[in-house]
Length: 582
Image (tube, rainbow, N blue to C red; front, side, top):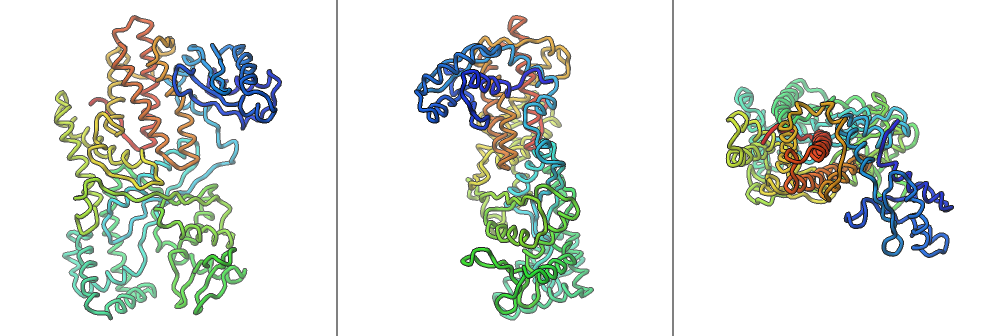
């Protein structure tokens, strides 16, 4: 049985409303954190809602509810504000119980605090696709968005109790392979390519396009090479296999560096033999019909809309055909509740047509979601012109670690050489991740080196410094670990506003988790972290912890322990590492 939870405050308000003889649906009751401590800890507009329905004065309804609320043991005060809001103050022992649970059993606290989706969905299962680089091309910085956002969403859903399968739908088919095969045969040397494959292949690809501008027949030759590949030509198949092998060898170290893992990496080629059955079934059912010039299409419900073309007039399949095969495979293999594709906003039309087609073909009953995101731009314009318009992902990671090391050398005088190197890695990779995740994915994102490596702004280094500072306090208090049973005997004393603000911040974490899950937006967790870090640093700078008198010292250590617990948990969901010291 739960000792205390934020939902109990909401329940107390609901009971007060009912005791006042007002009828209200639980869904209509909204309890929010008060904007300032002068206006309480929480506020509700339920009196305004009820007054509108009943034709009564809002302040009169609010006064009645406030009177009933003060009868609740956990409520120290309730008062009417403005046109009819009810402001609520909660007694500190209630918060003390919650903080002890956060410090001592965070998983148990979160399980009780957040609505358990398993009770609503039996065996909730997600399959998610993200990153999907193109074979034979270097990973550019544009791949970061899908990779980092998708990885965080995967972590969040796992944290919420979902069974999650990550399947990286890599681009290993397409006409570009015909061009590359032609270039290798015409100008390439396999023994030289093998020494440094990706730059060599990229150079050949560029050379092909230069030559194609001079020779209009070159594209026909490339198409012929790709057709031979599709028909099973041994030489072209072997070349394609080498290209894929070389590319994966180049890509994997980048994933390792970012600590990105996948359960499967089934590329487009994986679905080569799985498309025909879908097309045949669609023809038999009448869902797939003839379109212009003999193409096969799926008609839209709206006659003004365009159809989904699933086979070209020459019999060739398209990207949407492979996507349909992927959806059917996911359904057959994993029977997911939810299918998620983390792909940029430019592909909205594609996914709209894909989901419509999958529905008409009855390929799955899973909910289909396209998690879209905006584009990335660099505040430092010089980053946009390297490698001929491609900003290499490895270059960005190298630059992040280089800049982090300079910052560590400047600020971390007490660290050893190895400690500085490791911290610069943690900070650099973390700064890149957080710079993406703290922004609203729907909007275009700005990559700003100064902001992302700032020690006093909304950045990974600032958050890391906050956790390291908090952990240092616990170490200096001679508490060897946060599992110390001493915290069970520590009681909360809210003597200053700075303490109350941090406690109220901590209680917002379950809501941040829930919103991040429902909206597929990790920035809700980042927003929580930044607010908590700001308020904890204010507390630390304004109030003594270790030098406070004994009862206040224990209270502030309890707050500190809860801050560390929640920040470490949230760090994990964003893919950030926690440094021991900075």
